[in-house]
Length: 343
Image (cartoon, rainbow, N blue to C red; front, side):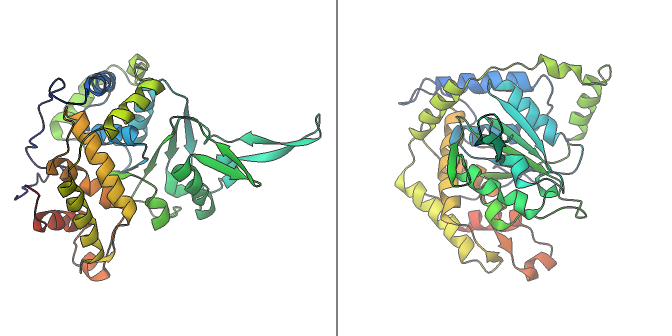
C-alpha cells in the first residue's frame, strides 16, 4: 500500500480510513472511550487551538500507561497544554521545574530523622502524584534524570532499600527545548526509551495563529484557563485501559510491527535501532488509536500513525546520514514504504 504522507502532518497518512467513528458496531463496546475523549477535547478546545494530533497521542499514552516527551521551540504552549490536560483529569497534579541544581532527592524524596519519634521516616517527593509535568527535563544533570528510571518504568521508588509504590494512575509528561544547548544535559538513550512517544510540536498555521490572537485579545492573563474543568476520573481511565486491551490485533499485523522494528536494526541509515520495548509500544498505541476512532480492531493505518512518534527518539542516524541532512522522519517513512502491508 503506497502511503502518501502529508508534509504538514508527520504522524499520519493524508486520509486515514478510520476517521468515522462507529461506537455501536463493535464486539467491544467502546462508547465509554468515545464519551471520555469528547468530554476532554471539549474542555481543551476552550483554550487550545490546533494541536489535534498531539492531543490524540497524549490520550493514547494515557490509555496505555505510557509517558510522553513534548519537544518544541519556546512559546508554542508545551507546558500550557500539559497543564490543561491535567486540569481535565480528576487526579492529583504536580509540576517539577528541572534546573541545573536540582538533586535526585528533590524529585523522589528523602529519608529524614524524626526527633519526636527517634525514627527515620521517608518524606515523599513531588514525583508522588498521579499526573506529573516535568518542565525542561534536559535542564537537570544526569544524576537527577537517572532518578526517573525506576519510577517511570515500574511506578515505584526505592530509597535506602525500601520500595514505595505510587498510586494509579501515574502519568508523566516532560517538555524540552531542542534549540538551546547551553546549560542543558542531553537525555541518554536509556532515558529516552522510557518515553512511549516523543512528540515534536510545530508552530501553528497562519489561520490558527490568527485565531489565537482573537481568542486572547481581551484576556492578557489567560483567565479562560479557569473554565477548563475536570471531566475524567481515575476509574474511567482504568476502564478505558481495560477496553483498549480488548481491541483485536491480527497476527499479520503483529508480524508487520515486528518487521518495522527489526528493519531499524538492519538499516544502513541507522547507527542504533529500536528495542522490543518499541514493538510493544507500537502494538499498545495502535490498539489505543483504533479504539479512539471507534473500532475494536487494528488496521495498518493505526500502526503507521504511531510509528514516527514511537520510533523517532529510539533510533540514531549514522553520522553520514546526519551530514546529508536526513532526519528520523525520513528514515521511518522509508521503512514504512518498503515493508509490505498486510492485506
